[in-house]
Image 1 (cartoon, rainbow, N blue to C red):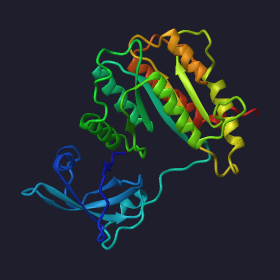
Image 2 (image 1 turned 120 degrees about the vertical axis):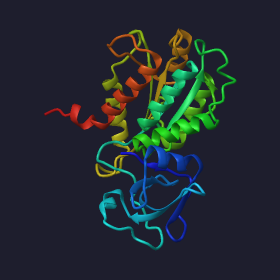
Image 3 (image 1 turned 120 degrees about the horizontal axis):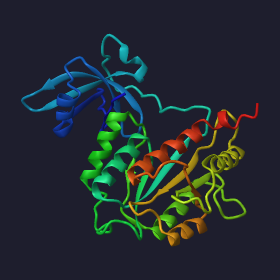
Image 4 (image 1 turned 90 degrees about the vertical axis):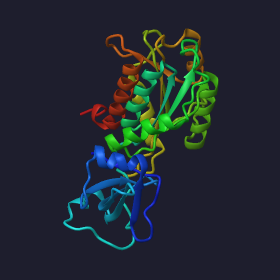
Length: 301
């Protein structure tokens, strides 16, 4: 499902004006005409049904109007006027919700573009470029906060329909990245007696098998600890997880030791040798599937 992602909020009349690159996106990519309906992702993350009420080619702007309270109502025959109605919140289900961070050692520019685009499409919350021993030269000077990556993220969200407002941070050293993750976990999670966060999970994709643990074993432990902090089965606690992926040269033994000391769990997939951009996508998909289907594969019956 495609969507239009906006940083603006409809006015008191339920109108939203689109200009510039977004105008060209709607005209040339979505090929919208007056009367067409579409889903608009608002700044607060909610999805709002809107209709195209006017296209002004001379001034190159499109005026949208609120037409439905939820995407399910987009099949309505006519648009509704008046003030903007409240959009429905994003999805919820009876499984543990996953907030996913990707710590990606800086790869070549084209590969980083692919990794960031694919991670956004998959709903990763935060992408942290990491400067390591095998990172590409010039990683420290690369601007990950500029318009280029904002455009990649916006286009990926619009294509995929992701409700997650993916963010790319500035490049961090590994020590800085670990400190950032620990600070985030301290805000969201309750630490256990070992100092590890009991509702947070940090994983490292490692190309060798030494010191590694099966993915499902690591996820099962995290889901068990997360469930202990949930009020009840109807209100599951979100699981916060981090996935660390190396650059073209992988992750050095010293860096792996540093991550293990910080309670990250190395995991190894029994598959072919993967490029770094493939490994990141593979790891994200495997982790999301293991978490979302946790009740199924942990069933004892």
